Image (cartoon, rainbow, N blue to C red):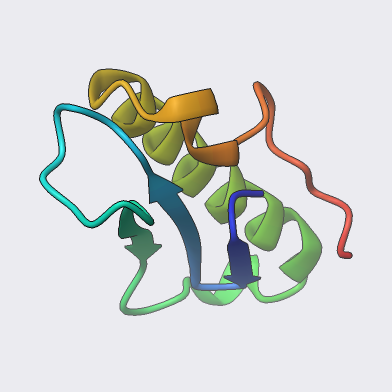
Length: 88
């Protein structure tokens, strides 16, 4: 998703490049990082790490896509319409 994405049981980050008249940047575009984190993972959640990774990746993707659309990034910053939850 985007240029790069990372997910763990307590966080996820999406990196994408935005080329837009709304964003002052070089001709290569502005590099944007959106991240979500939880400082303390609940003990009951430790047993379902895959679900947590998917949840954090989904939130980070949704926020990143909304930001890309708001900034009018070319091709939505390379972000797909739905999160890709299968590791590359």
